[in-house]
Length: 111
Image (cartoon, rainbow, N blue to C red; front, top):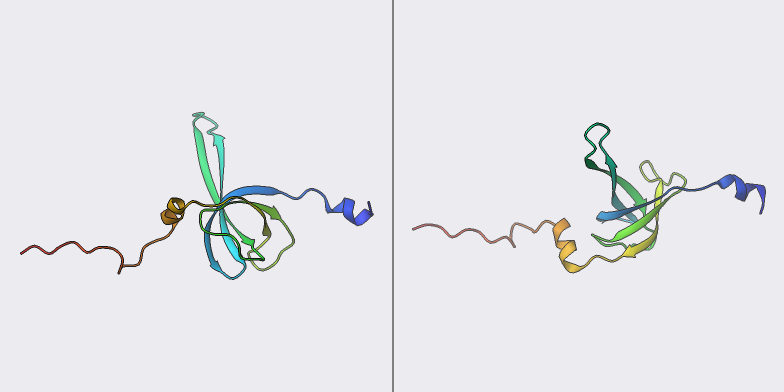
């Protein structure tokens, strides 16, 4: 191993769900972390969104992905999609997507 490879060190790896893939080669991944409240001891869930680079544009809404820390790729991107752990089922995808107004049924008018 060369000195450059040993200096690279350990990169952070996080797991999260893809909540947006509307950009080119970029996805937004929501990462949840759970921890006990310091005083009340109830498990609290906090979320954070990361922009990650998706070179081949294979991620879809609702996919469970693993993202890895990398060099800065743009103003907001410091992570890249390392691998897709689980593909989203059809029902999970619908939870993240809003339906256009034309598809939503209008209530019937009263006489």
